[in-house]
Image 1 (cartoon, rainbow, N blue to C red):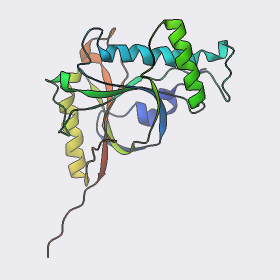
Image 2 (image 1 turned 45 degrees about the vertical axis):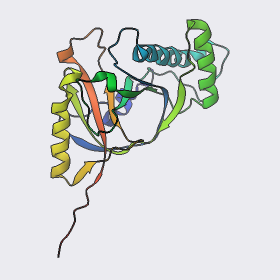
Image 3 (image 1 turned 90 degrees about the horizontal axis):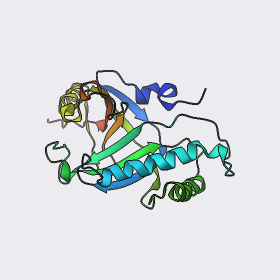
Image 4 (image 1 turned 60 degrees about the vertical axis):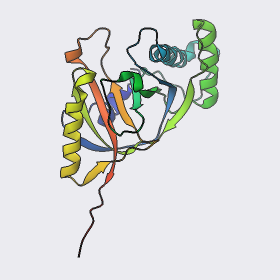
Length: 216
């Protein structure tokens, strides 16, 4: 059976329907950065997704080529993920999707090296006739986070985020958004095949312990 990240690391891919705290270890990703409305037909986001999957499947099928990856074992391509933010705010305005900044990613197995990644980019460009120049090998260390399984459309995410914020306040934590610690989504449903009300999305936010001021 091919290795499946969702099954082997359920604590990171299959959270409960209520908020929970998790410490996420560093991981390597195929990443493409961009801005703008993700729903724009043939827009930057849609192009980024094409690049991510082209490289991901080139690496997955590398054992059928002359390129040998040390330590390789067969695996299921992990789900699409995204890190999202908008300028000058820690929240997300879902009504202004054109203001989105994003880093779209697909996780890489640990045995994939930067050299393997470079080979896959070059190979995918040739085979798919696709410009993969914006793809990068990116290591992300999320650390301490709160997460929840969100059910439904993306525009309904504020309700799940509110549950996380309430949970944090009740347990002595606060959000810790920075330039490197961002709103994170993991997409477990194929939006092309599943109705929005049935979508399952992991929402994850960076957090830290709150520091309460003591007065004397």
